[in-house]
Image (cartoon, rainbow, N blue to C red; front, side, top):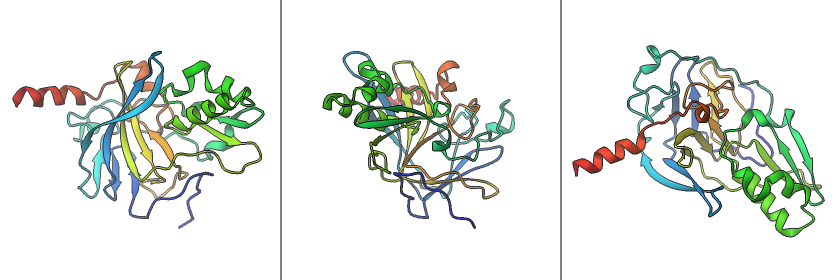
Amino acid sequence: MPKQKVEPGSQAAAPEFKITVTDKGPYLVYGQPPLATQHIVANEMGESWQFEEGRHFSTENEPTSLCRCGASKNKPYCDGSHHSHKWKPKLTARAEALLDDVEITSGDAVTLTDNPQYCVFARFCDAGGGVWAATETSFDDTARRQAIRQASMCPSGRLMIWGNGSDLPFERKYEPSLGLIEDDALHVSGGLWVRGGIRISREDGTSYEIRNRTVLCRCGESANKPYCDGSHASMRWRDELEKEIEREEELV
C-alpha cells in the first residue's frame, strides 16, 4: 500500500486512528477518538474568536458510524437515512495536496497560504480587520501575532501561515480527536472537525492527505466532498443536537 502524503506541519496519528469514507453512506471512525461539539464563540465585537467544547458523544463502537448525508434522525450517528434521502454522495475532492493550489499573501515577517475551496465559513480570519491585512503588516509584532493566531484557528487548514524562510507552518498541537462544529452566531451546524493527523481514506483504499486539521462535510451538500465547503451556512443546516439536550432536560 502506498504511503499516505503528510501535509507540512502535520504528523500522522497512531495507526489505530482512521476514518473510512464510504461511497454512499457514513463515515466509519476507528480508534475511538474523542468526539464533542465545538462551539464557535464570538468576542465582544461579535467576531469569531475561539472554540468552546460542549457535549461529548461516544465512539466506543468499532467502527462508529457518523452521518454523512445530513438526514439522520440520530445525529451525529448514521441511522441508514442515506438509503432513502435524496443527496449526492459522490466524492468530488481532487487528489492534489491542499498546498498545490493556494493563493499567497506575503508580509515582512510571515507568509499566508490560502486555498479558498476549503473554506468552511468559520470566519476566524475576519477578526480585527482580517488575517490578510495582518499578514501584509506583519513587520508590526502585534499584527504578526494576530496573523499567526487567526490562520492557526482556521479549522479546515484552508489558511496556513509560515515564518519567512521556514519550511514548516505555525501549527497548534492537536491530539487525535473529532469535533462537531456548531456556529451559534448563525444558528447553523458545521462539519466534522478532524484533528491530530487522523488518516482518512475511501472504501477502495484511496487515501487522502494526512492533515493536522481538516473538516469533513456533515450536511451532505458540499461540492468538495468529503470535505466541507461551507454549504451548511447557505442552506441553514442544523443537526438539532441542542434541541435533543433541551428535550432531555425537560424529562429530568
